[in-house]
Length: 213
Image (cartoon, rainbow, N blue to C red; front, side, top):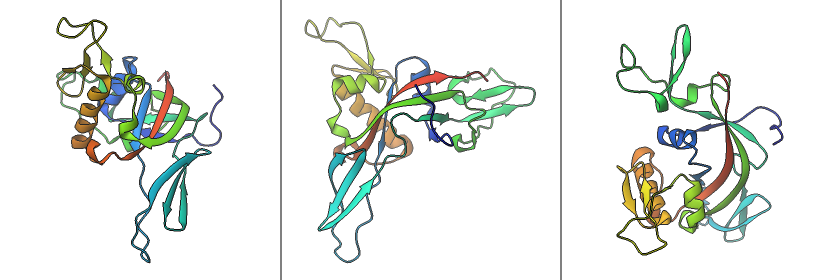
């Protein structure tokens, strides 16, 4: 894949997202699209109308606003994650940390302080599109890191259990239902809009690369 042009952009990921990528399960990320501000004159909110030419189109009356995603197909972005630096030793990442493996509990630094030089993960962006979060398909949910387990005796032939790693390994019978639970966990963890509001999201698929430290 061709390298990105200009300065490499960052993307902040949670610990569970990093772990899922490193385990080879996650190849897609969804992030909420911030809607345009409500016009003072009309007080009519902008509504999402369509996704065209790589832009999300919002309309409020006769006024139109175009939004581009932060990342686009063909770019390479570096991952920012929680970390701590150790004198004379490699960077320790929170996603790898085993409690008690260090002499004292680390004072984790925020992901935003991790530079591209110290980052270990690159995401080569394959596709970005705008859609409502509830539009996710079973295939999309699998790309988001939902784990398919062995067939359970309690389900019909040809059906499978799916596990939500961020929800105490709770097992459900649909990858979409599993992702719904995952979204709820993420909503409680870092905020945003709940599943029931069906927010507009940027859906980004990527190919990860672990780089040498």
